[in-house]
Structure formats: structure tokens, C-alpha cells
Image: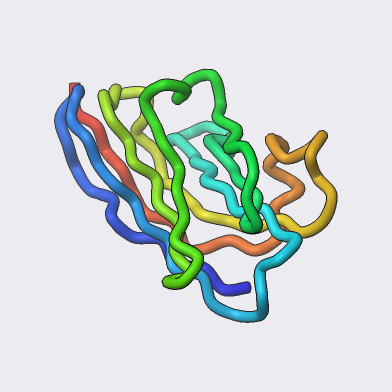
Length: 125
């Protein structure tokens, strides 16, 4: 699976931004698609994930209620709508995929095997 994220930029605290991720490659049935991020000087962390075939979306507590993940199956796109952005949301955001039955581990960064190149989001306070 190849992934390409876009849509990052510099915004002020409280603003909104929408990230996009284009997927290409083989069929995605059985995959989870997630957004993960890496802030400067920190390790990568989980943000949100959903099963490509449908079902509940899982969010990290730090973004719950502010971020919304969605997908467009026909376009092979996933999106991350980010509202009420905070300075601590500053990071490189990656879309990534994980294959298989990962319902109990889907919030772990290491289960995601294919990654896009990342897009930088900078939130000024």
C-alpha cells in the first residue's frame, strides 16, 4: 500500500485544518487506516484509526471531540478534520495502514507497517 498525506500548514491556535491521504495499491479490505503524528523531539504517537471496511473510529484521548477521521472508498482517500487546534498538536502527521485483526492493538504505532511521507502541521499559540 502506498500512501501520500497532504494538507498541512501553519495555523493559529483555535483554527481548523483538514488533512488528506491518498491510498494506492492493492485492495484494502482487512486493513486499518490510521493517522499518527510525531511532535518535535518526541516519539510517534497514535491519533486515530478506522477499519477500511467500516466500523467504529478510535481516537486518542488528546484529540477526541476535536478531530474527525473519515474516508471516501470510491476515491481511496482518508481525511482528518482537525478543529480547535492547539499548540501541542504541532507535529508531522502521517497516514499509515495496518493489516489484520488488530482490534486490541490498533492504537500501537508499531502495528502500522506502511506509512506515507508525512505532512507538517504547525499551530502557533
